[in-house]
Length: 120
Image 1 (cartoon, one colour):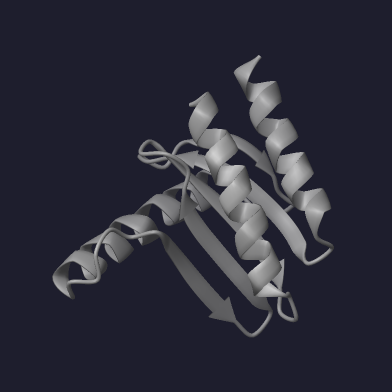
Image 2 (cartoon, helix red, strand yellow):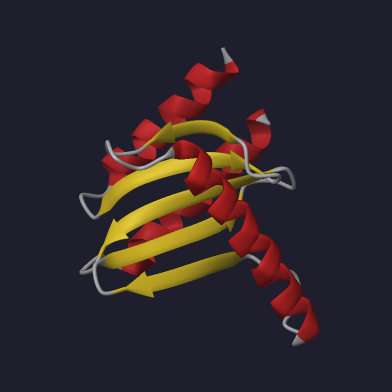
């Protein structure tokens, strides 16, 4: 039941923008809860990397007195990876195209993360 609801949130998120290529919900300890990932991406590795990046981002934000971490944005030559907390126990990871309109994606991701937080 919960898995179906989480998948439907991801499906709605992915459908909200042609710039979103994939998304996943990962527990704070790196376990995959739900995902819509393209073939060739390993769920376990994505989960572990997302949890590690958020942990490091959180420590960095604390150390540099930036307040509570909200998100981590990674920009590469082929696009973006956005990691956002979805409540205190989960992370929403989104992979977007290089030419993505980030402002719109940030809004859609925030809404999806709030929906995930209500369910978890």
